[in-house]
Length: 284
Length: 272
Image (cartoon, rainbow over all chains, first blue to last red; front, side):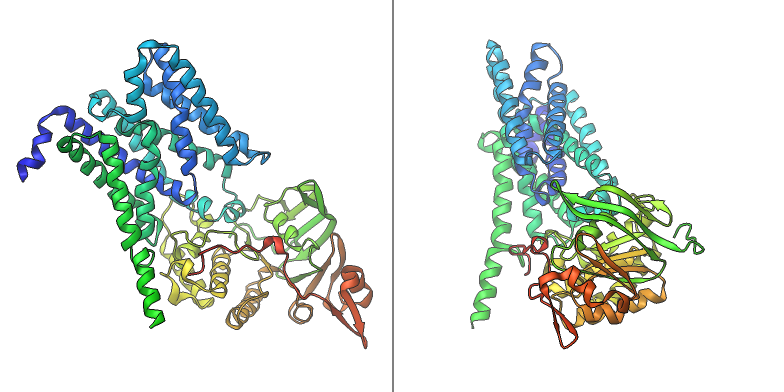
């Protein structure tokens, strides 16, 4: 049994992959709590796809791919904020426009590079076993920045998300905080790229947080539970990927989905089963 | 509380204020002063701009023109001196916060945004919850409460802000008896603490009996002063138009459906 757990750890690429997946699982789950509560799931997905042109440009210029992704994500995040600020168009429309434009730009750029096929599939679906020491350090640093900011600005973000009217009467800088949250989200997405890829980032943001939402009564508990589910999904997914020989990103997301389904049916108070029992009792 | 200058007669000054949104002007050329510690009933027909006035006073709507001064200083200079209880808070009732969490938010402006609440903050929150009769619900999720209880949570939060000026939009409309009584007791308590209170209401009797001044609005200021001065047949007719009838010298206003509908939102699944 012990051997079963330890065997994968004999490979350094597995050690690095596990660590990277753990960090991503926790960071995405914590910021994902705001994504779920503020209904930003679509935005998260769009941001992830909008990263492609940044990666392509970085590749063409021979620069750092992660850095390229970071610049693209932040530009698109702030662009969405700026387009929807005046209220002339709704936020989801702004997202739709920028998301499709950025994705098209990315595809156009990439189609001009012949040899790019392999790297592209890594960006779309992740390549957690290819994490280098340098990647790992960057992931840890960015993760720490995100978690620390969320911890420090817990109260402003709570009030902004729960009651924007109070946020205004207390004179919170709403635009600044909203943009900061978008930038943090962009960072989290860039950090997750190597683990789960563009296609599955949204699940890392939303699924563990939604699971925690069904179980928690308060936001700190929701964030802690989300982090726990994120971490558990990452580790379980990595082991599943090692022993069943399936893609790691997909294994992680499927594990997270399994946790969600369990909570959806069995959660106290909010679960489906709970509702049935309650109704049966009442009809007696 | 900061630099409270009691020698200054007017605590809330409006000077030729016009407010509107979406290209429409709702309130025009409002000029009035509320002395420190007074209780003002804001009265007028549906769509008169009562909610709009409150929103302008807390900075939710920009001013088209004119000036608002609080303690002789422009709006926004005193960060935590105005508290506002909307008619019905447009929040997600399924948000994972407890009653105590929500009331504690009233303290953030005082405590600072980065610091953990002090023992004093906790004591104030506890006292405000007790005063509003919701202390036993402290650890309940807000989604579990009844409408009246939810209203009292927001009153408790406004109280926890320790405001100099408290604005309440229709706190007596559509609430249960307990909440109504708590809100009325709150009014008396605030008077002893010299908090300036502005309350919008459809209940003209209550406005006449419980308040120092009445502000009669209909897109502009119709009358402002002691209730007996304001509640003259002519003023009422000007403000309410066809909605007012005089029967044997008693003025009756037709307000069968109180509340401005656009402010009323039901949240599906929120009231479990």
